[in-house]
Length: 326
Image (cartoon, rainbow, N blue to C red; front, side, top):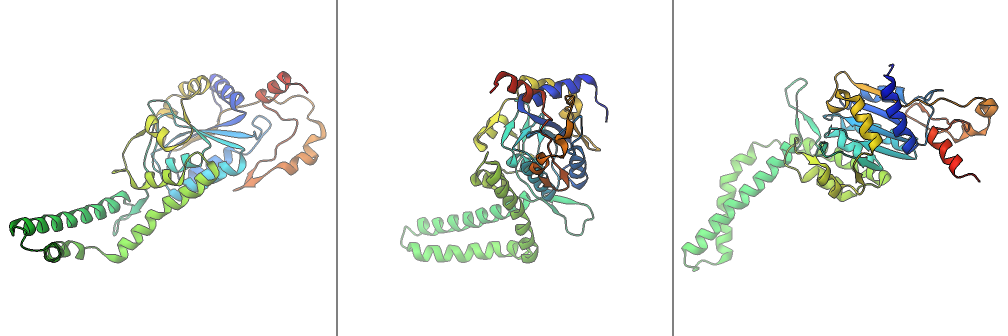
């Protein structure tokens, strides 16, 4: 895809400031999106592999497995993985955020809870929020305890405390069991077990990603999975700072790039809008360096050829060398 020159220039400014390839991902997190991202990560003369990568991610979420694969890919092929959230990054997008080393969020942007989407029984293509299961179980537990507590207190107070706590509690437990048993009887143990197993997926993926990214903790993962009431809950930049170690406002270069891209980053695109935006002119005379031992430094992950050539440097790398000659 040919980009307007003003977008390329803005992307180059971001690239030079971070020594990073600049990637845009706007759309659902799924296998097609991951495939397109892998394609854009293939190095070329104009877009050589750089040490780091920054992804401008706009998404409502998608598949947890694909989010994990994308985050792992970016972790494996870069020294540092930056994530910028121009507007919205929900559910599976938050899972990718757990893998980033640093996160940039303007005040208008938002993350969401880690919410695995479960298939609806007997419904083709229909899904429901995993939080419904957790909320239902918590609600049943709270209602059962409320019935038990009210009955026990009424027996104790109503008897003028002539009935002991032990007897009152046993009677209250019997009544609460009788009241709530018909409700619990409607729960299918097999379906519930399958749902709870699926809910553990986000936790397991998140724990593995933060271990590498080190911008969050296991407690962050637990909070994102368990502590929010709905799939739509808004985690703004201020709250994100309490969850992640390093959340910053975008730099001037990043804001300029976001503004140039406009609608592509402000709203989720369908079909996917995925590309690498920065381009770097290569110096003359690459010579035989392409064939020397530099290629041994390359790493490969998920089919991405990340071989770097020693004579290929971004403008930022060359500037740093000029400013700090040996």
